[in-house]
Image 1 (cartoon, helix red, strand yellow):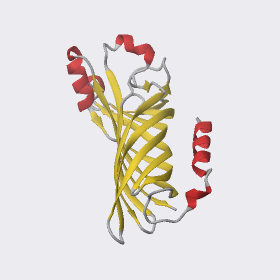
Image 2: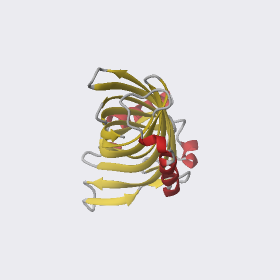
Image 3: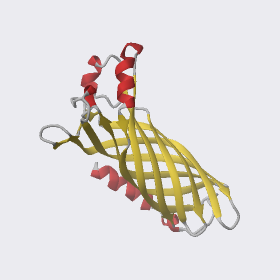
Image 4: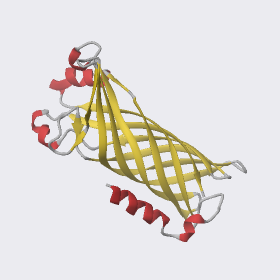
Length: 234
């Protein structure tokens, strides 16, 4: 996974044109930027109607896992006010379960780390000398790299285990190692290069490990992430 991050970063840095200073993206203009911020993440469970009671309980007994995001990206202008924005992103995702299996007080916090590779289309709406409002959308591919399960209010009072990725991981305390989905963003880029933005990651891959799917009765578990960030593009 480190190789993926290094290769993606190298691709973004490979063109000298990325350092061009412009106030709007269009034509052959290009920039490079970095941004970081806070994630609020959960899972979305779904499945057949006969599993509705369990699925409703899983969706209900969740709280946001508060994590972080760090992204390096490029802006490649392809038309006036329109650009393609590939990137490499470290995303902290997961969830927090409460009242696990109907047992009052038990809490399981999952904090997972992913390397996401998004490719967004960005449309800029100029706002005079202030900058531009930016609307973005596009697909992403994610690779799970690490994580922790932290258990509270059990004996011992608090303990921690690794979060496993792969086909043979255990459901709810592990997941499949690859994700894919779509990003939707709204932001503002000032003419001095400062960027403020919000992004919603809509996971589409079923995270229930492959070896456990035959026993899950078509249940699905997917990432949902609301992120806020501040950054700078050159």
